[in-house]
Image (cartoon, rainbow, N blue to C red; front, side, top):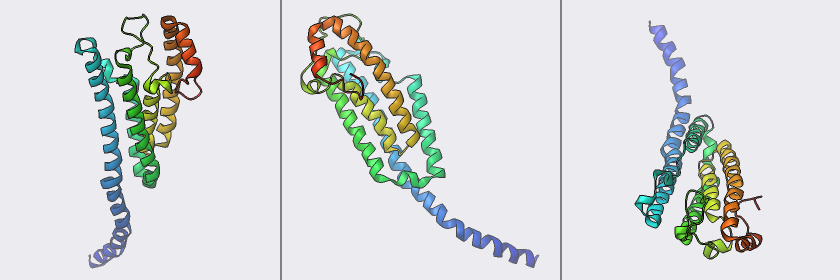
Length: 222
């Protein structure tokens, strides 16, 4: 029995000493890196969607706004869940991947830029801005070409694109960064021509001239 006790101390004690640094390091990562990055992500998502709804209500009135103005769909939720799972797996298996603070801070800056750009677009357009594409012309639907619309035709889409990709760069999620960029770009690349078909019908040559001199605001989309 005495021999077994000595053997246990001989084998287990060195192992516990060897494991201690990695345990402390992992705890530090969870207490600082994960808490900071995940809290930034949580605040970014909550602020983005709640402000979308609040602005829509303030511009169009509560009776004319539905929960769709939160911009939360099934596919969007699945994408966010996947990005969270990627983050958890990577911070457990490759914790050093999340320690590139210049990448994370760049993502945070993109989130702020994207948020500011989109909200500025909504405020500038006022009642002309809607979350659903208008297929018929209403009296208050004007062609907005001033403010931020002087530089890009679809600043709201540009802002959303920058914001969504920025959230994944902020989390140092390489897979989701590429995935979000591809999916978001494809969505807007299809949506912009569809929306502009009706804008050309509403505003005719005025919109065509505007489209010729101002970029769409999405990469590789005319």
